[in-house]
Length: 618
Image (cartoon, rainbow, N blue to C red; front, side):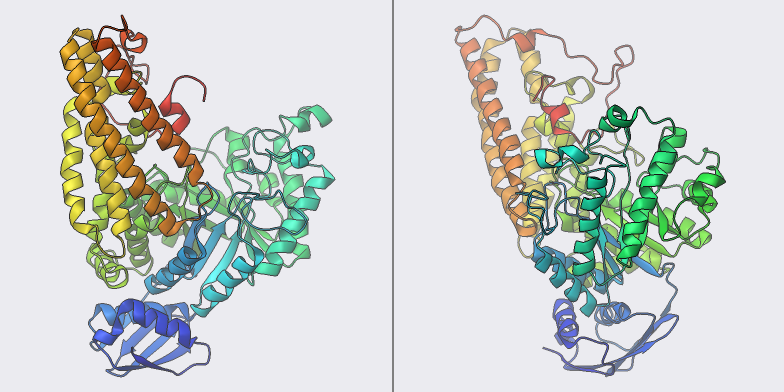
């Protein structure tokens, strides 16, 4: 262990030793003196014994330690220009996949070493509120003690832990309980202008005020598409002016926030949704200044955009936000919500483009979102390449080699190895601008009623075996659980990808013996590989996430295995002459996109189990 002495009482010795151990500094040094000086710029140098760090916050000390380790403990001197005052990530802890306390702490350590200084915990109902036992009930919610511990741990590394809650929509988790029926408008939206709604919101703020030291809070308020169209309309009549309704609600929430000393930030999309009936567009005119001026003074806006690699788009929409006359935040992406696999390469290109626009527009606060839509299947740490590259872009280092070096130093693995984990979703008719996730929708697509079979190429299936072989060499060590489940998934897809096409072709050709061979060999192999994948995926889940929520994957994957078994039995029964036909194989598969007169082979972005598994109701 490196002997560390501190030249500042602001530095936490335990945090410094934890960082040094992660970076394996003992390979280069026996002792290290760290001197931190608060300053406006970012600079550090190492003279052989003393690491001098000048920065606005102590988080940069840990990045300086990373630079020291990356350079092999040799003398160096660095000055960096960081675009943002605050830069961090948002961890989705609500979509069935609540990170374990150990995973949260590990992310905090890694973020400090990369050079970030904020973390948001996205918790819709997954945090404990006194007097609300059904809030996050059975969902793996964090206790108040958990959050206080995260907050204290983050502070050791100079990282600000920011609560990220919902005070308008995305609260479907609570509306399954009758106790909340009185504050339910429709869908996942709270009932506005109902006093019990504001009593619950007050409890939310009372909780976060107790648990977080930061006095910045993300209050959500995004994607309330049908605001006012449910029980609100029944009670008050259909809202004539939904902008007016939302602004009244926002002002109520801002008053509650002020009561507890909070400065708010909120997603800005609803201002655009209500006026333009859509998301952000560089072609939108400016919002009305009168509406923008009514946003409370203690509320700042977040422009979020996860879909572009064009700096001009980000620049245009940021300029549109100037009508609000206040600090604008930007939220980008570290794509973990395509299904089982990440999308680091796109996230990296998007980060470079958005940071360029943010620098041009003087954006001071930014973060990367790591959503977990539709089950939270993707390993959270699989997004580390995107986090490494985005951090370097934010410090002005655009060469990939910078990020690869810090990645190797912190993570202990080559970035190129991690990037292998997303190759399987690039199979098919793919271009860099496309989002595609065949390992999700074709995994669950039915063997007999596969609605995507019209648009895939049977010969693409062989590529999955090649990717699986590449991944096998990385299954040992700290990150082996990620490579193992992705490799097992690829081995499933090598059989599953085109099995529906092969089945239907043999059936249509009345090749009974071929169908029997397919059932006895390929369907049996598919079942074996699905069961092996389940074991690997279960292990990966429990390496990062709480047990709560995995029952969804028990149901999905267990149901898939049972369905494949039944399809196999049906084929064997047909081959033996015990049934005259298989009804679903009698029907022609149509183009899932409705392009019957111009069908092209292509991949899709379909991260929805219910849509993929069956055309019938689940």
